[in-house]
Image (tube, rainbow, N blue to C red; front, top):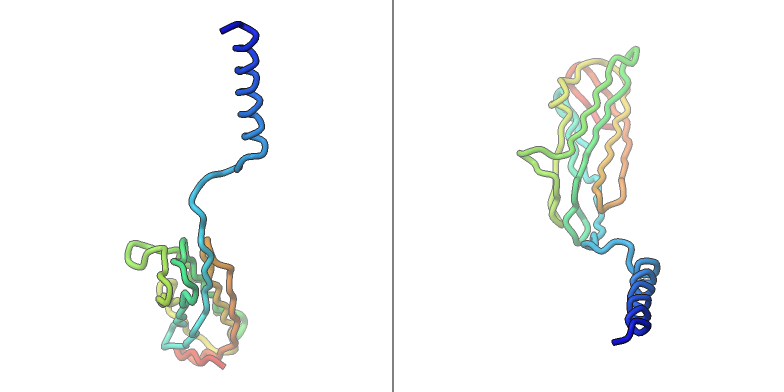
Length: 146
């Protein structure tokens, strides 16, 4: 094979690789299937707020995080924030149709008096973040959602 033909083939190979790198796929990997989360319940208990989040989509929710904030009371003395991003007991995924519950009790017992604002946020790496805010009333250890 002559040298000119070899140079032409090498040039063509290099040019083809450059075109592939320029116009080819940037990242080849697993495609993530989107799903949907829904905050079903926000319930007041003695000393705690309990929430239930459901995966209403068709795919497994990955890296799920649920955050609960309870703020207010007389003189703003009630300030509880609990966030769960999964642990060995509850995991980080949520199957379609499954429900995950979280409670503020892990952060402390709520006791006080007055109006509070309860904000719940749920998110996953393959789902849009959803937020629900409700008002409540704390009378001693009793939390009433209004």
